[in-house]
Image (cartoon, rainbow, N blue to C red; front, side, top):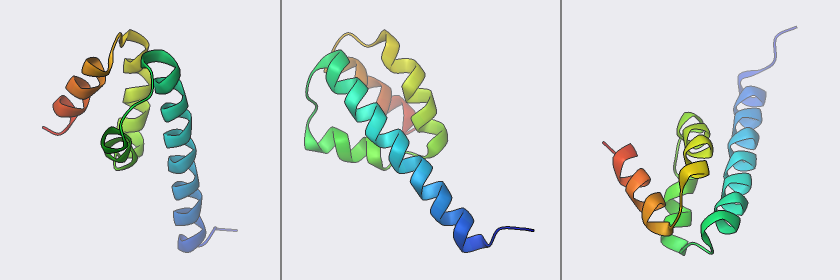
Length: 75
């Protein structure tokens, strides 16, 4: 039985919210508390970009690294 389009959308949103929450926790632990602006930028990323950020944050040493990564992802 196929799942409805609405169910799929809700399920996708849940995955994205979970990824955002986990990444924010990992970033806070790795580079310290991040600003509300950076947090909002992260929340607006696609699931694919969130997964990419999850890999990239392992190399971050400071908030500057996060800011640079976000700037590069916009283009």
